[in-house]
Length: 447
Image (cartoon, rainbow, N blue to C red; front, side, top):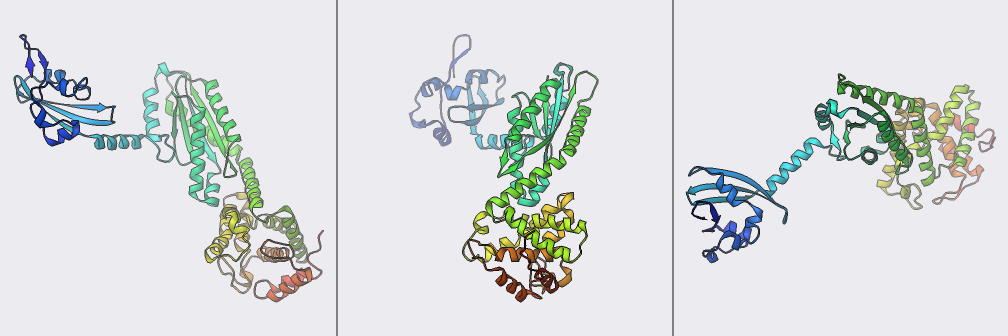
């Protein structure tokens, strides 16, 4: 360092450096000469670091000060430690701490954000609620959102599909909000939005945007439904935590109101998906239903059991919605792996039915409609009357209808040939008594 008559530093000479500093700056320690740092590193004096200011902070020989410097030019962080060496000289230790800062920033981000959606997490929002719960933020609103039917989606298609709904919902909510609003993922299928300086009208406007976006959204063919609830703090003296609880209660109430509508729309979508990629047409279902009701009436089933049978015929193959179209309509012989996929559809259908109260009565039958009378069926290998009666009826109706209608992988056979095939399979695949009822009179007669 050189100084003027008043002792003020006017320039800094770089006396020596190690090979790491050479690599960092591109300088050569053997070519330093008597050049000032500003000559060696023109304009910036090491990326804009204030060497003079750093030295002035040192008041005693042997003292040191540590600084961090971010270099925007090449996206690096440095830690610069300045040591007082003698009255007119100091030494510096410069370390590249970019990796450390990146990990530190990543840890900080992870502590405040949800890993799946990128939204703030519940911890961050709760801290912000404490910070912003002041009179100058009034009115302050909280909006809660909850995905309707997520469990049904998870049970049907798996959690990876459910994650898509969670991420889509997060994006819809984020897009509906302003930059100053704080959007968080509150729980598994729940979101919370903190709206500083926002009245009831403003909160409702955001809710309306979310609702309209959901109406336009389809995720792999399925609709997205969000239950919403908003509450506003207009006056001092009310804890924001109580406002949050009321918003949550309103969301739950909205979820209950839309429960039936959500389930109905979901199953319509499922059935439409199944029709689009398989042979589950309305005609197929109608013909199956006619055959099944013919058997049911011959058994003198009650009206409630006949209605249950109709529901089973409609939903027996609903589990196939999870199977890709290429397998469902394949013309050639299925591979062992493809056949295992097909065999999984009764269990998928069972989970779908169990997830909804209205369908629970036929869940067991959906699971069992591919069981065989001799125990060679799937998925559980049930035998004889262990197989639910309505599932046994459905199996016969399905087999007859499939055999008498053209499919890409198989030509239709005549009703007489189909009847002979059913007789052959009696006591092995089918209940022999039901086969007898089905074939007398002919089971393909439509009503």
